[in-house]
Image (cartoon, rainbow, N blue to C red; front, side, top):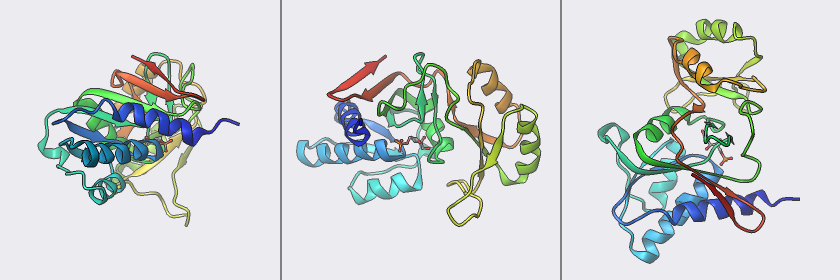
Length: 226
Ligand code: 5RP
């Protein structure tokens, strides 16, 4: 069986090698991004790299602080040199689904502000066609039912994401997430435009024209797509 954790680590280490002294980084969220963040912190300690960063989630922020990575607030930054983040799916045209960890809103803002975005993952992440992974759609609570109604009209099963105790999952923005089971997304651009036209949708998990490089861990190395 494939060792997916080792693949994530290989991808993360390769991506962290792209970090250069003085960069302003966007730190992604999730298990693969965590490997990269730990490696970036190691390079700061052992190689003397001087970096500043923004965090794409409160969890990533806490990790970065615990590792001594100086953080800034995204709200005061116009451009990031590099974002390193995970993904739930990535297709051959470098379109991705993100948001499995619920951090899509901040992840997309960071990705859009980045000169370069590297997505990292294990060999379960590349797909020919997006959609097997349920698409996260983050919704302001004020619009919860009205957006639910509009999402249902698209014809795919939807579920409000919940926590382990059954309460609705709340994002860092105190918003909620619908996971939409499209199964197959043939026209990601058209779907993205439809979702963006729904008042109350804060973010959706389709990342189109945002990813520059995918680094995927393999059994014995990495595969890189630009
Ligand atoms: C969080 C994300 C994650 O990057 C994505 O879910 C992948 O996570 P992991 O590296 O743990 O598989 O989009 O919102």
